[in-house]
Image (cartoon, rainbow over all chains, first blue to last red; front, side):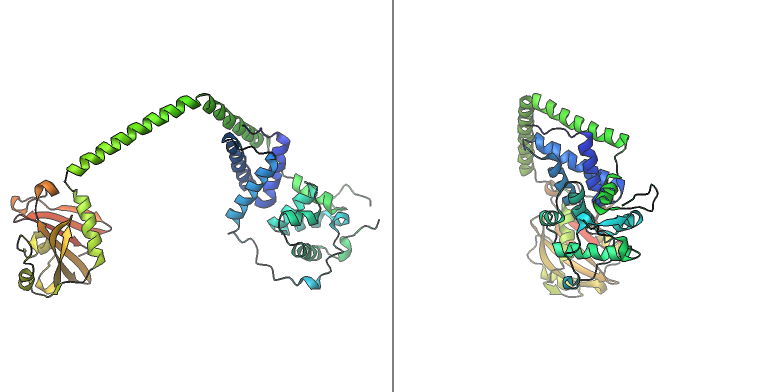
Length: 164
Length: 217
């Protein structure tokens, strides 16, 4: 039983997923290529894979975690006291951001945070669902996002939550 | 919320994130590479499936031949009892490194010679190579029985300038050890390097001598 080839659109999406982790094109391309090959060869061995993209994403993710975890790109963040943050008002669905801060904000996220955002913005999950699926503690994620928003907004009103 | 065409724009976070993610695009070349990779792998698969049964049979028969050959070689080895110098050298170096306690501790070669009564031969003083290294009673620590390729042997230990040298003497059997250089015929000793140690081999007065020493001795 053979697994189907992926089309260009699917490959772009998977490359973008790999970039969420790798942050440089060569590494991302390498992650994607290896995962793609694995997927095809597993199919040749008779393994039937119903969701090719999900399968390939998993391989990319696992390889990334194995390879790049060793590289500490930033200092460890101090332990967050979740109680000191008011988590619930962080309603990302209705949040706004200044385009210049967006770039800084995006780079400042950890790869695992960006993965949550990928699941949210590209795959259409809610952030809560994404946190559950990816085993990210919701409180940790939200408080980190909150801290970054505070850091990168010149004044708090830059991040405007639009009233209905 | 009005959106300017310039950079000073505020936009929904979700949209901004989508744009950040989708900014990254495979180039035409990279895309072609991945499509070609897929084609290639799937083609290999097709070929493999077609030739499947034939290839399987070929594999089985070539494995069978390999096994028969291996068994044949092992069979031959069982009956040929020649041990290679390298195998001997490996064994004595391992023994040298273990530094097992001496049976008899003495500086006197005479005393040591008197100790080894169980051997079919009598020990030789240091030997030619030993002389080259200035091994003498002063540097002798003592001796112990040991074995070399399963045959009973004498082991003498020397210490010189902090370096240990081990001298093995065993009855020489050309059928077992092959042709080892003979001192009396002015043949130069065989020299090998094992684990950074020098192993010298020669036959003197029909005794197989093996010396393990440090290269800087």
